Length: 246
Image 1: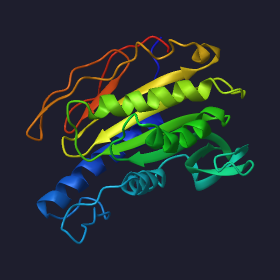
Image 2: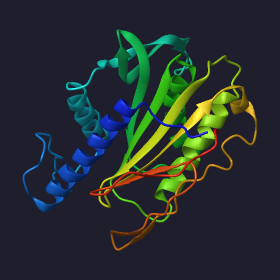
Image 3: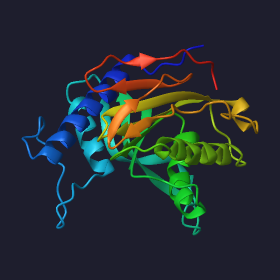
């Protein structure tokens, strides 16, 4: 069974990717940004990249869509992230159809590692995507790619997804999408997984591996199609491979 995002959401994400690539290229080259959003520079002259750019550019696309949306949306369930009791958390962006929540989106940026301290921060947002009663979307920005950047990021996401589904807490069936947009090489990879009772099995997601990217001196040499993943590149059509439900 092929798993696809709602085509309207997919169009919003694709447009956001393109604006991110074009705006980042303008920031690096010192040319005018195609959008009104500019990647700022630090006091040392480096281009600053954060999840805020993706969030703001996607919000800009929402103004011309059929969705309603809210930002920093209070969760419907309570969470005990601080260890001082449970309370509402916040979701970065929530999309609505006819004032009913339909998609929660979390935004992150930067490389990750499989070390426990870094995973703890990611675990909080994954819990919100898993336990809230709507579909979820993880939008991650990487400034640049290397041979293992996306693989390491996915290993971290995968590890925390499996850990969260093992918690003694009920969750309803849903779809969760993982999307990673790489700025310098101008491509993105994306996979959508099914969350259900099978998600508690120990081997869940073990056969879902991201594309092995070949980058040489900052240039994307090869970005092969990989089962279960959608690949988007700047100035090209979307490439996809049919997947079985995970």
